[in-house]
Image (tube, rainbow, N blue to C red; front, top):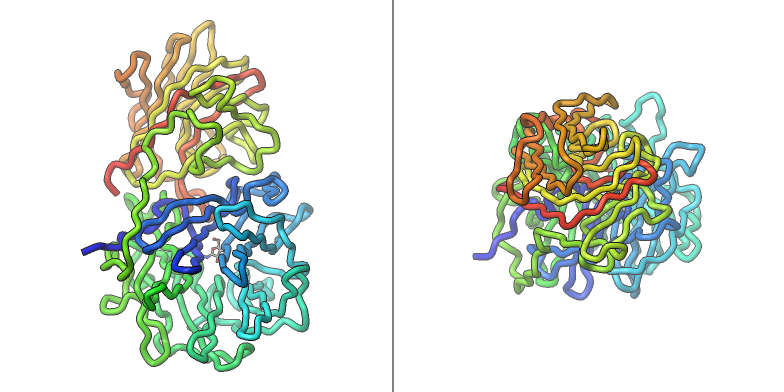
Length: 518
Ligand code: 6LW
Protein backbone atom coordinates (compact mmCIF):
# COMPACT_ATOMS: atom_id res chain seq x y z
CA UNK A 1 0.00 0.00 0.00
CA UNK A 2 1.34 3.44 -0.91
CA UNK A 3 2.52 5.51 2.01
CA UNK A 4 3.08 9.14 2.76
CA UNK A 5 6.49 9.45 4.42
CA UNK A 6 7.35 12.23 6.86
CA UNK A 7 9.04 14.60 6.77
CA UNK A 8 7.47 15.56 3.47
CA UNK A 9 10.26 18.08 2.97
CA UNK A 10 13.34 17.07 4.98
CA UNK A 11 15.71 19.80 6.16
CA UNK A 12 15.20 23.50 6.71
CA UNK A 13 11.67 23.97 5.31
CA UNK A 14 9.65 25.65 8.10
CA UNK A 15 6.23 27.29 8.27
CA UNK A 16 4.65 25.34 5.40
CA UNK A 17 1.59 26.69 3.66
CA UNK A 18 -0.32 24.69 1.07
CA UNK A 19 -3.12 25.28 -1.41
CA UNK A 20 -5.02 23.22 -3.94
CA UNK A 21 -5.88 24.26 -7.48
CA UNK A 22 -7.42 21.96 -10.10
CA UNK A 23 -6.16 18.83 -8.38
CA UNK A 24 -2.64 20.18 -8.03
CA UNK A 25 -1.07 21.09 -4.69
CA UNK A 26 1.39 23.88 -4.12
CA UNK A 27 3.43 24.47 -1.00
CA UNK A 28 5.77 27.24 0.18
CA UNK A 29 8.10 27.58 3.19
CA UNK A 30 10.10 30.35 4.91
CA UNK A 31 13.65 31.19 3.89
CA UNK A 32 14.97 33.95 6.23
CA UNK A 33 18.35 35.32 5.05
CA UNK A 34 18.68 33.00 2.05
CA UNK A 35 18.24 33.93 -1.61
CA UNK A 36 16.22 33.14 -3.70
CA UNK A 37 13.32 33.26 -1.26
CA UNK A 38 10.28 31.06 -0.67
CA UNK A 39 10.60 27.81 -2.64
CA UNK A 40 7.47 26.58 -4.40
CA UNK A 41 6.80 22.83 -4.40
CA UNK A 42 4.26 21.01 -6.52
CA UNK A 43 2.49 17.69 -6.00
CA UNK A 44 -0.44 15.81 -7.48
CA UNK A 45 -0.70 13.20 -4.73
CA UNK A 46 0.57 14.93 -1.56
CA UNK A 47 3.20 12.17 -1.31
CA UNK A 48 5.71 13.28 -3.93
CA UNK A 49 6.79 16.90 -4.00
CA UNK A 50 8.97 18.56 -6.57
CA UNK A 51 10.35 22.04 -6.37
CA UNK A 52 9.17 24.06 -9.38
CA UNK A 53 10.63 27.45 -8.54
CA UNK A 54 10.91 30.23 -5.98
CA UNK A 55 8.56 33.17 -5.44
CA UNK A 56 11.30 35.72 -4.78
CA UNK A 57 14.03 35.41 -7.40
CA UNK A 58 15.01 39.04 -8.08
CA UNK A 59 16.89 41.48 -5.84
CA UNK A 60 14.03 43.95 -6.38
CA UNK A 61 11.71 41.46 -4.62
CA UNK A 62 14.11 40.42 -1.90
CA UNK A 63 16.49 43.03 -0.43
CA UNK A 64 18.21 40.94 2.24
CA UNK A 65 21.37 43.06 2.27
CA UNK A 66 21.11 44.19 5.88
CA UNK A 67 19.29 41.31 7.54
CA UNK A 68 20.85 39.54 10.49
CA UNK A 69 20.91 35.74 10.61
CA UNK A 70 17.31 34.48 10.95
CA UNK A 71 15.79 37.79 9.95
CA UNK A 72 14.51 38.13 6.38
CA UNK A 73 11.56 36.13 5.11
CA UNK A 74 9.31 34.72 7.83
CA UNK A 75 6.21 32.57 7.47
CA UNK A 76 4.41 32.79 4.13
CA UNK A 77 0.97 31.79 2.89
CA UNK A 78 0.14 30.56 -0.62
CA UNK A 79 -3.39 30.80 -1.99
CA UNK A 80 -5.09 30.67 -5.40
CA UNK A 81 -7.89 33.10 -6.13
CA UNK A 82 -9.63 34.05 -9.33
CA UNK A 83 -6.89 33.07 -11.78
CA UNK A 84 -3.86 34.05 -9.72
CA UNK A 85 -1.61 32.54 -7.09
CA UNK A 86 -0.81 34.81 -4.16
CA UNK A 87 2.13 34.44 -1.80
CA UNK A 88 2.03 36.80 1.16
CA UNK A 89 4.88 37.08 3.65
CA UNK A 90 6.94 39.36 5.90
CA UNK A 91 10.43 40.73 5.41
CA UNK A 92 11.80 41.12 8.94
CA UNK A 93 14.62 43.56 9.32
CA UNK A 94 15.90 46.09 11.84
CA UNK A 95 15.14 49.72 11.31
CA UNK A 96 16.59 51.96 9.84
CA UNK A 97 16.16 49.90 6.70
CA UNK A 98 12.65 48.65 6.13
CA UNK A 99 11.68 47.24 9.51
CA UNK A 100 8.94 44.62 9.14
CA UNK A 101 7.34 44.82 5.72
CA UNK A 102 4.33 42.68 4.85
CA UNK A 103 3.84 42.18 1.14
CA UNK A 104 2.43 39.84 -1.44
CA UNK A 105 3.47 38.73 -4.90
CA UNK A 106 1.28 37.10 -7.56
CA UNK A 107 1.78 34.70 -10.47
CA UNK A 108 -0.46 33.03 -13.02
CA UNK A 109 2.00 30.12 -13.03
CA UNK A 110 3.33 29.17 -9.57
CA UNK A 111 6.64 28.16 -11.19
CA UNK A 112 7.05 31.89 -11.82
CA UNK A 113 7.84 34.52 -12.66
CA UNK A 114 6.18 36.18 -9.67
CA UNK A 115 5.29 39.85 -9.62
CA UNK A 116 7.06 42.67 -7.88
CA UNK A 117 5.98 43.00 -4.23
CA UNK A 118 2.75 44.81 -3.35
CA UNK A 119 3.49 46.25 0.08
CA UNK A 120 0.63 46.25 2.56
CA UNK A 121 1.19 49.65 4.10
CA UNK A 122 0.53 49.82 7.80
CA UNK A 123 0.32 46.03 8.28
CA UNK A 124 2.35 45.47 11.41
CA UNK A 125 3.51 42.15 12.80
CA UNK A 126 4.30 38.87 11.05
CA UNK A 127 2.67 35.71 9.65
CA UNK A 128 0.26 37.16 7.09
CA UNK A 129 -2.54 35.24 5.44
CA UNK A 130 -4.99 36.25 2.74
CA UNK A 131 -8.62 35.22 2.96
CA UNK A 132 -11.47 35.75 0.50
CA UNK A 133 -15.01 35.71 1.83
CA UNK A 134 -17.83 34.22 -0.25
CA UNK A 135 -18.65 37.63 -1.74
CA UNK A 136 -15.06 37.91 -3.02
CA UNK A 137 -13.96 40.52 -0.46
CA UNK A 138 -10.27 40.10 0.37
CA UNK A 139 -8.98 40.19 3.93
CA UNK A 140 -5.53 40.38 5.42
CA UNK A 141 -4.87 38.40 8.55
CA UNK A 142 -1.73 38.58 10.63
CA UNK A 143 -0.40 38.70 14.13
CA UNK A 144 0.88 41.62 16.06
CA UNK A 145 2.70 42.14 19.31
CA UNK A 146 0.96 45.01 21.09
CA UNK A 147 2.38 44.59 24.60
CA UNK A 148 6.06 45.35 24.62
CA UNK A 149 6.78 44.32 28.21
CA UNK A 150 5.48 40.78 27.60
CA UNK A 151 7.43 40.05 24.49
CA UNK A 152 5.66 37.04 23.12
CA UNK A 153 2.35 36.54 24.83
CA UNK A 154 -0.87 38.43 24.20
CA UNK A 155 -0.23 38.67 20.51
CA UNK A 156 -3.22 39.84 18.56
CA UNK A 157 -4.48 37.80 15.66
CA UNK A 158 -6.06 40.52 13.57
CA UNK A 159 -8.11 40.75 10.39
CA UNK A 160 -8.63 43.71 8.10
CA UNK A 161 -10.26 44.29 4.74
CA UNK A 162 -7.71 44.61 1.93
CA UNK A 163 -7.85 46.38 -1.40
CA UNK A 164 -5.84 43.83 -3.33
CA UNK A 165 -4.67 45.86 -6.32
CA UNK A 166 -3.17 48.60 -4.14
CA UNK A 167 -2.37 46.63 -0.98
CA UNK A 168 -4.28 49.22 1.07
CA UNK A 169 -5.92 48.12 4.28
CA UNK A 170 -9.53 49.34 4.43
CA UNK A 171 -11.93 49.94 7.32
CA UNK A 172 -10.79 48.96 10.80
CA UNK A 173 -8.66 46.09 12.11
CA UNK A 174 -10.65 43.39 13.93
CA UNK A 175 -8.91 41.50 16.68
CA UNK A 176 -9.99 37.84 16.47
CA UNK A 177 -7.89 36.41 19.32
CA UNK A 178 -5.39 37.66 21.86
CA UNK A 179 -4.81 34.18 23.24
CA UNK A 180 -4.35 30.64 22.10
CA UNK A 181 -6.04 27.63 23.60
CA UNK A 182 -4.57 28.47 26.98
CA UNK A 183 -4.97 31.74 28.85
CA UNK A 184 -1.84 33.87 28.42
CA UNK A 185 -0.63 31.57 25.65
CA UNK A 186 2.89 32.16 24.47
CA UNK A 187 3.07 33.48 20.90
CA UNK A 188 -0.31 32.89 19.29
CA UNK A 189 0.73 33.25 15.64
CA UNK A 190 0.76 31.69 12.18
CA UNK A 191 -2.97 32.24 11.58
CA UNK A 192 -4.93 30.80 8.67
CA UNK A 193 -8.64 31.34 8.08
CA UNK A 194 -11.04 29.00 6.23
CA UNK A 195 -14.77 29.05 5.48
CA UNK A 196 -15.99 25.45 5.61
CA UNK A 197 -19.60 24.27 5.83
CA UNK A 198 -20.88 27.56 7.20
CA UNK A 199 -18.13 27.98 9.82
CA UNK A 200 -15.20 30.36 9.79
CA UNK A 201 -12.24 28.49 11.24
CA UNK A 202 -9.23 30.27 12.67
CA UNK A 203 -6.22 27.95 12.84
CA UNK A 204 -3.20 29.20 14.77
CA UNK A 205 0.08 28.09 16.32
CA UNK A 206 0.89 28.82 19.94
CA UNK A 207 3.54 28.09 22.51
CA UNK A 208 6.48 29.43 20.47
CA UNK A 209 8.25 27.61 17.70
CA UNK A 210 10.11 25.17 19.92
CA UNK A 211 9.26 22.26 22.21
CA UNK A 212 6.04 23.86 23.48
CA UNK A 213 4.71 24.50 20.00
CA UNK A 214 1.06 23.56 19.39
CA UNK A 215 -1.78 23.94 16.89
CA UNK A 216 -5.18 25.23 18.00
CA UNK A 217 -8.41 26.05 16.24
CA UNK A 218 -11.39 28.34 16.86
CA UNK A 219 -14.62 28.83 14.93
CA UNK A 220 -17.40 31.30 14.40
CA UNK A 221 -20.50 31.69 12.28
CA UNK A 222 -19.43 35.30 11.69
CA UNK A 223 -16.20 36.41 10.06
CA UNK A 224 -15.42 38.93 12.77
CA UNK A 225 -16.25 36.51 15.58
CA UNK A 226 -16.56 35.92 18.42
CA UNK A 227 -14.53 32.74 17.82
CA UNK A 228 -15.40 29.82 20.07
CA UNK A 229 -12.62 27.65 21.43
CA UNK A 230 -12.41 24.02 20.32
CA UNK A 231 -12.74 22.08 23.59
CA UNK A 232 -10.15 19.62 22.22
CA UNK A 233 -7.46 22.28 21.76
CA UNK A 234 -4.61 22.01 21.12
CA UNK A 235 -5.47 19.77 18.19
CA UNK A 236 -1.83 18.81 17.70
CA UNK A 237 1.28 19.14 19.82
CA UNK A 238 4.17 16.96 20.95
CA UNK A 239 4.90 19.24 23.93
CA UNK A 240 4.01 16.55 26.48
CA UNK A 241 6.32 13.96 24.87
CA UNK A 242 9.63 15.34 26.10
CA UNK A 243 12.47 16.98 24.28
CA UNK A 244 13.96 13.81 22.88
CA UNK A 245 10.72 12.64 21.32
CA UNK A 246 11.60 11.50 17.79
CA UNK A 247 9.45 14.29 16.35
CA UNK A 248 9.13 17.45 18.42
CA UNK A 249 8.22 21.16 18.21
CA UNK A 250 5.10 20.45 16.15
CA UNK A 251 3.19 23.57 15.14
CA UNK A 252 2.42 26.18 12.48
CA UNK A 253 -0.07 24.37 10.28
CA UNK A 254 -2.18 24.85 7.16
CA UNK A 255 -5.17 22.74 6.05
CA UNK A 256 -5.94 21.49 2.56
CA UNK A 257 -8.92 19.67 1.08
CA UNK A 258 -7.82 17.18 -1.55
CA UNK A 259 -9.54 16.68 -4.89
CA UNK A 260 -11.03 13.40 -3.54
CA UNK A 261 -12.54 15.14 -0.51
CA UNK A 262 -9.91 13.99 2.03
CA UNK A 263 -8.49 16.61 4.38
CA UNK A 264 -4.83 16.81 5.31
CA UNK A 265 -2.74 19.28 7.25
CA UNK A 266 0.86 20.34 6.78
CA UNK A 267 2.92 21.64 9.69
CA UNK A 268 6.44 22.22 10.86
CA UNK A 269 8.23 19.93 13.30
CA UNK A 270 11.79 18.93 14.11
CA UNK A 271 13.72 15.74 14.63
CA UNK A 272 16.28 15.85 17.44
CA UNK A 273 19.71 14.81 16.31
CA UNK A 274 22.09 13.38 18.89
CA UNK A 275 20.48 15.01 21.95
CA UNK A 276 18.72 18.35 21.98
CA UNK A 277 20.14 19.43 18.64
CA UNK A 278 17.81 20.10 15.77
CA UNK A 279 20.50 20.43 13.12
CA UNK A 280 18.09 19.99 10.23
CA UNK A 281 16.01 22.86 11.58
CA UNK A 282 12.27 22.94 11.29
CA UNK A 283 11.01 20.56 8.60
CA UNK A 284 7.66 20.06 6.84
CA UNK A 285 5.37 17.20 7.88
CA UNK A 286 1.80 16.19 6.94
CA UNK A 287 -0.99 14.38 8.78
CA UNK A 288 -4.46 13.20 7.74
CA UNK A 289 -7.43 15.06 9.17
CA UNK A 290 -11.01 13.94 9.81
CA UNK A 291 -13.91 16.04 11.03
CA UNK A 292 -15.95 15.34 14.16
CA UNK A 293 -18.69 17.67 15.40
CA UNK A 294 -17.52 20.24 12.85
CA UNK A 295 -14.01 20.31 14.33
CA UNK A 296 -10.90 18.88 12.63
CA UNK A 297 -9.14 15.92 14.26
CA UNK A 298 -5.45 15.75 13.33
CA UNK A 299 -3.89 12.31 12.89
CA UNK A 300 -6.89 10.40 14.22
CA UNK A 301 -6.31 7.25 16.31
CA UNK A 302 -2.80 8.19 17.45
CA UNK A 303 -3.10 11.96 17.90
CA UNK A 304 0.57 12.42 17.12
CA UNK A 305 2.57 13.09 13.99
CA UNK A 306 3.66 9.74 12.56
CA UNK A 307 6.54 9.04 10.20
CA UNK A 308 4.26 7.03 7.90
CA UNK A 309 0.61 7.15 6.90
CA UNK A 310 -1.38 5.36 4.23
CA UNK A 311 -1.13 7.71 1.26
CA UNK A 312 -4.14 9.80 0.28
CA UNK A 313 -6.46 7.96 -2.06
CA UNK A 314 -5.17 9.69 -5.18
CA UNK A 315 -3.29 8.37 -8.22
CA UNK A 316 0.41 8.44 -7.44
CA UNK A 317 2.51 10.94 -9.35
CA UNK A 318 6.19 10.33 -8.58
CA UNK A 319 8.74 12.54 -10.25
CA UNK A 320 12.33 11.87 -11.17
CA UNK A 321 14.40 12.58 -8.06
CA UNK A 322 17.17 15.13 -8.37
CA UNK A 323 20.57 13.66 -9.24
CA UNK A 324 22.91 13.29 -6.25
CA UNK A 325 25.73 14.89 -8.21
CA UNK A 326 25.67 18.36 -9.75
CA UNK A 327 28.27 18.45 -12.51
CA UNK A 328 27.77 22.16 -13.02
CA UNK A 329 27.12 21.59 -16.70
CA UNK A 330 23.86 23.53 -17.01
CA UNK A 331 23.63 27.23 -17.87
CA UNK A 332 21.98 28.19 -14.54
CA UNK A 333 22.55 27.10 -10.97
CA UNK A 334 20.17 24.34 -9.93
CA UNK A 335 17.23 25.37 -7.71
CA UNK A 336 18.82 23.55 -4.81
CA UNK A 337 21.49 26.26 -4.48
CA UNK A 338 21.02 29.35 -2.33
CA UNK A 339 23.01 32.47 -1.63
CA UNK A 340 23.50 34.10 1.72
CA UNK A 341 21.61 37.40 1.47
CA UNK A 342 21.01 39.18 -1.83
CA UNK A 343 23.68 38.71 -4.49
CA UNK A 344 23.87 42.14 -6.13
CA UNK A 345 26.67 41.21 -8.57
CA UNK A 346 27.18 37.72 -9.93
CA UNK A 347 30.27 36.20 -8.30
CA UNK A 348 29.58 32.80 -9.79
CA UNK A 349 29.82 31.58 -13.37
CA UNK A 350 28.98 28.32 -15.06
CA UNK A 351 30.21 29.67 -18.41
CA UNK A 352 33.77 30.87 -17.74
CA UNK A 353 34.99 27.30 -17.41
CA UNK A 354 32.37 25.01 -18.95
CA UNK A 355 31.48 22.07 -16.73
CA UNK A 356 32.77 23.86 -13.63
CA UNK A 357 31.33 26.32 -11.17
CA UNK A 358 33.66 29.29 -10.81
CA UNK A 359 33.44 31.48 -7.71
CA UNK A 360 35.19 34.84 -7.72
CA UNK A 361 36.20 35.75 -4.17
CA UNK A 362 34.93 39.00 -2.73
CA UNK A 363 36.19 41.18 0.10
CA UNK A 364 33.34 39.89 2.26
CA UNK A 365 34.13 36.72 4.20
CA UNK A 366 31.82 33.97 5.38
CA UNK A 367 32.44 35.14 8.98
CA UNK A 368 30.57 38.42 8.72
CA UNK A 369 27.01 39.61 8.19
CA UNK A 370 27.39 40.01 4.45
CA UNK A 371 26.87 38.45 1.05
CA UNK A 372 30.11 36.49 0.52
CA UNK A 373 30.92 34.51 -2.63
CA UNK A 374 29.24 31.32 -1.46
CA UNK A 375 26.61 28.95 -2.81
CA UNK A 376 24.89 26.64 -0.38
CA UNK A 377 22.40 23.80 -0.21
CA UNK A 378 20.41 22.46 2.71
CA UNK A 379 21.63 19.57 4.84
CA UNK A 380 18.65 17.21 4.54
CA UNK A 381 19.84 14.15 6.43
CA UNK A 382 21.29 13.65 9.89
CA UNK A 383 24.04 11.63 8.27
CA UNK A 384 25.28 12.54 4.82
CA UNK A 385 28.36 12.71 2.66
CA UNK A 386 29.16 15.71 0.47
CA UNK A 387 32.19 15.90 -1.75
CA UNK A 388 33.65 18.09 -4.41
CA UNK A 389 36.83 18.79 -6.36
CA UNK A 390 38.50 22.20 -6.13
CA UNK A 391 41.05 23.96 -8.29
CA UNK A 392 41.81 27.39 -6.91
CA UNK A 393 43.94 30.47 -7.49
CA UNK A 394 44.18 31.94 -4.02
CA UNK A 395 45.04 35.61 -3.61
CA UNK A 396 47.13 36.85 -0.68
CA UNK A 397 44.90 36.75 2.40
CA UNK A 398 42.20 34.87 0.48
CA UNK A 399 40.82 31.37 0.88
CA UNK A 400 38.35 28.85 -0.54
CA UNK A 401 36.57 25.98 1.11
CA UNK A 402 33.55 23.98 2.09
CA UNK A 403 31.48 24.70 5.18
CA UNK A 404 28.90 22.94 7.32
CA UNK A 405 26.88 25.97 8.19
CA UNK A 406 24.37 27.40 10.59
CA UNK A 407 25.27 31.07 10.22
CA UNK A 408 28.29 33.37 10.04
CA UNK A 409 29.03 32.92 13.76
CA UNK A 410 28.36 29.19 14.05
CA UNK A 411 29.81 26.80 11.50
CA UNK A 412 32.62 24.40 10.55
CA UNK A 413 35.01 25.04 7.66
CA UNK A 414 37.50 23.02 5.66
CA UNK A 415 39.52 25.89 4.25
CA UNK A 416 42.36 26.22 1.78
CA UNK A 417 44.86 29.11 1.99
CA UNK A 418 48.08 29.88 0.14
CA UNK A 419 51.32 29.71 2.11
CA UNK A 420 54.97 29.84 0.98
CA UNK A 421 54.37 28.46 -2.50
CA UNK A 422 52.16 25.69 -1.13
CA UNK A 423 48.81 25.41 0.53
CA UNK A 424 47.49 25.06 4.05
CA UNK A 425 44.29 23.12 4.58
CA UNK A 426 42.62 23.96 7.90
CA UNK A 427 39.64 22.55 9.76
CA UNK A 428 38.07 25.38 11.72
CA UNK A 429 35.23 25.34 14.24
CA UNK A 430 33.53 28.70 14.60
CA UNK A 431 31.45 29.12 17.75
CA UNK A 432 29.84 32.38 18.88
CA UNK A 433 31.94 34.29 16.35
CA UNK A 434 35.31 32.86 17.43
CA UNK A 435 37.39 30.54 15.24
CA UNK A 436 39.24 27.57 16.70
CA UNK A 437 41.64 25.84 14.31
CA UNK A 438 41.25 22.10 14.90
CA UNK A 439 43.99 20.98 12.50
CA UNK A 440 46.26 22.28 9.75
CA UNK A 441 47.88 20.28 6.97
CA UNK A 442 50.45 21.50 4.46
CA UNK A 443 49.57 20.28 0.97
CA UNK A 444 50.98 21.03 -2.49
CA UNK A 445 49.48 23.64 -4.80
CA UNK A 446 47.41 21.13 -6.78
CA UNK A 447 43.78 20.17 -7.40
CA UNK A 448 42.23 18.83 -4.20
CA UNK A 449 39.13 16.83 -3.35
CA UNK A 450 37.17 18.07 -0.33
CA UNK A 451 34.66 16.04 1.64
CA UNK A 452 32.42 16.48 4.64
CA UNK A 453 30.74 13.44 6.08
CA UNK A 454 28.35 13.86 9.00
CA UNK A 455 27.22 11.22 11.44
CA UNK A 456 24.67 13.17 13.50
CA UNK A 457 26.67 15.74 15.49
CA UNK A 458 30.09 14.49 14.34
CA UNK A 459 31.44 16.06 11.15
CA UNK A 460 34.42 14.42 9.48
CA UNK A 461 36.35 16.56 6.97
CA UNK A 462 38.57 14.82 4.44
CA UNK A 463 40.73 15.75 1.46
CA UNK A 464 42.15 13.87 -1.51
CA UNK A 465 45.25 14.75 -3.52
CA UNK A 466 44.86 11.57 -5.58
CA UNK A 467 41.29 10.96 -6.78
CA UNK A 468 39.45 8.60 -4.43
CA UNK A 469 42.23 8.49 -1.79
CA UNK A 470 40.54 10.37 1.01
CA UNK A 471 42.57 11.39 4.08
CA UNK A 472 41.21 12.81 7.33
CA UNK A 473 41.94 16.53 7.59
CA UNK A 474 41.28 16.40 11.37
CA UNK A 475 39.65 14.08 13.87
CA UNK A 476 35.87 14.34 13.53
CA UNK A 477 34.63 17.76 14.62
CA UNK A 478 31.79 18.54 17.00
CA UNK A 479 28.91 19.96 14.94
CA UNK A 480 26.44 20.13 17.80
CA UNK A 481 26.45 23.94 17.47
CA UNK A 482 24.90 23.84 13.96
CA UNK A 483 21.43 24.31 15.33
CA UNK A 484 19.12 26.85 16.88
CA UNK A 485 19.68 25.40 20.35
CA UNK A 486 23.28 26.73 20.19
CA UNK A 487 23.10 29.49 17.63
CA UNK A 488 19.56 30.77 18.22
CA UNK A 489 17.32 31.80 15.35
CA UNK A 490 15.00 29.84 13.13
CA UNK A 491 17.06 28.24 10.38
CA UNK A 492 18.70 24.86 9.75
CA UNK A 493 22.05 23.58 8.54
CA UNK A 494 23.50 24.10 5.08
CA UNK A 495 26.61 23.00 3.23
CA UNK A 496 28.38 25.82 1.40
CA UNK A 497 31.14 26.22 -1.17
CA UNK A 498 32.91 29.56 -0.91
CA UNK A 499 35.76 31.75 -2.06
CA UNK A 500 37.05 34.80 -0.19
CA UNK A 501 39.33 37.67 -1.14
CA UNK A 502 39.45 39.70 -4.32
CA UNK A 503 41.58 37.91 -6.89
CA UNK A 504 40.72 34.45 -5.54
CA UNK A 505 39.18 32.13 -8.11
CA UNK A 506 37.74 28.82 -6.98
CA UNK A 507 36.69 26.30 -9.64
CA UNK A 508 34.50 23.40 -8.53
CA UNK A 509 34.22 20.43 -10.86
CA UNK A 510 31.18 18.84 -9.23
CA UNK A 511 29.29 18.67 -5.96
CA UNK A 512 27.78 15.44 -4.75
CA UNK A 513 25.42 15.20 -1.78
CA UNK A 514 24.20 11.86 -0.51
CA UNK A 515 22.02 11.14 2.49
CA UNK A 516 23.22 8.20 4.59
CA UNK A 517 20.08 6.99 6.34
CA UNK A 518 17.71 9.43 8.13
C1 6LW B 1 7.16 32.36 12.09
C2 6LW B 1 6.24 32.05 13.16
C3 6LW B 1 6.90 30.85 13.62
O1 6LW B 1 6.97 33.54 11.41
O2 6LW B 1 8.22 31.08 13.62
O3 6LW B 1 6.77 28.63 14.05
C4 6LW B 1 8.41 32.26 12.89
N1 6LW B 1 6.29 29.76 13.80
O4 6LW B 1 4.95 31.80 12.82
C5 6LW B 1 9.61 32.14 12.07
O5 6LW B 1 9.54 30.97 11.28
